[in-house]
Image 1 (cartoon, rainbow, N blue to C red):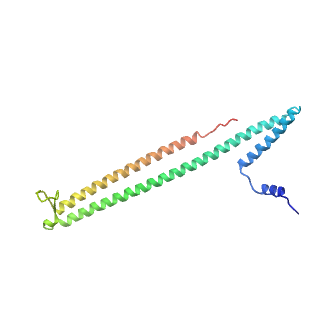
Image 2: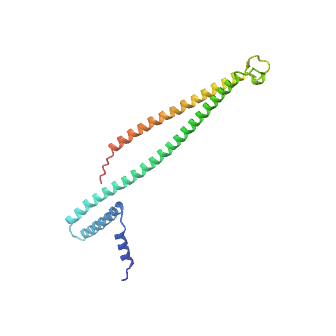
Image 3: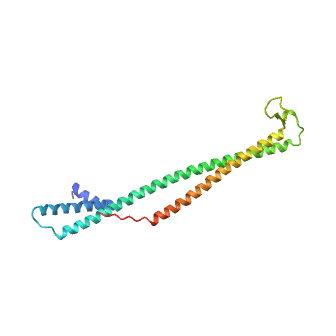
Length: 199
């Protein structure tokens, strides 16, 4: 049995499912053809029938469904874009938090190593090679021993670690506040997510 191109197209159309938007557009095109035929008949003197009125109402309903379909598709796409942007921002924030935590850990470790270095030098005699003058010049009599220098550096590293910890905790609290406010906004939007489309 030979099949021409039109027959093949109709078989393929029956076998492949169409999405709702394509079905609605096809239905709209059919209704427009019917209404055009009715308009041509009325120009030739034939009166309008009840079928024409029914077709107009059906066309309005189909247009409304198409508009709703377009709205749903657009809002779904925009929601996906928003979620992708939020995921990218969240990843960036997590990376930043990890970097701050690592920096804080390194500063704390350095502070502890200086403190241990100072404690190991406590029992040793104070030799000139262990200390330096505060301003690096030979004229100043304020001498800093190796123990004092290590203690000062340990304190400085500890303060720097505490400052990094404060920055990290502030960033975490801001992120939590932002996340909770976004959840509230999403819940409000979902409650008020009704669209009236009139044609």
